[in-house]
Amino acid sequence: MKNQIEFEVFGDYALFTDPLTKLGGEKLSYHVPTYQAMKGITESIYWKPTILFYIDEIRVMKPIQMESKGIRPIEYGGGNTLANYTYLKDVHYQVRAHFEYNEHRPDLAHDRVDGKHYSILKRSLNAGGRRDIFLGTRECQGYVEPCEFGSGVSHYHKTPEYHLGTMVHGFNYPDETGKDELSVRLFRPVMEEGIIRFPRPEDCSIVREIKGMKPKEFNEHNTQAAEELLQQLGGDSY
Image: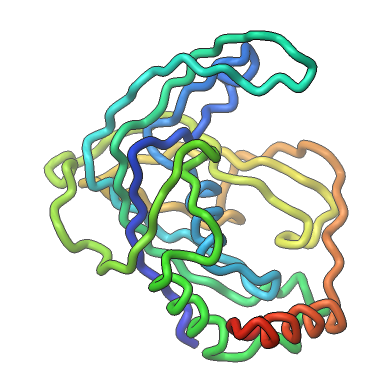
């Protein structure tokens, strides 16, 4: 089954927020993207509940630069708060990822068609993604293009090891794990010559439960209605 994708993502600014900095209303970006952020970007290119994306590795192409800005957060109850957000500036990454069928969704087994999802994924990538690309937060617009992973020169290609401390890896959702809970994963990444290799979610040893949660329900009737609508609009098959 063809299921691997390689692409580059870039933008003027990114904010992969360290959750420890959210408590006081300020936000500070991690030095590099989290696994969950890259998974979200990949799902913005193409997503179906039938498949699960796994981020294998990323390559940091440009130097890590930070820039602070005074931001007025939206306060629906009124107010005139000024917060300080620290962004990554001028980011560029290469990404290698793949997808597998979601074995925790037997109700979608009818949608496991070899070649179908890969073909739609490639077409969606060539078109720049099906949804808007955001680099960690909505105000940071990003762009994706196909690439050959490992091409070009990374700014850190001569740096043997770059330790990044403890970071959020991602979240475990019930429709991906088969458990009725939402939990968070942590890990300690090391960048080697510009490349960060991510462990699979089930291989992360630091996992903390957040709350109970039920999976979203999908069935053949729901997906069939969506597929008929897309065909009427002249789009790809759902």
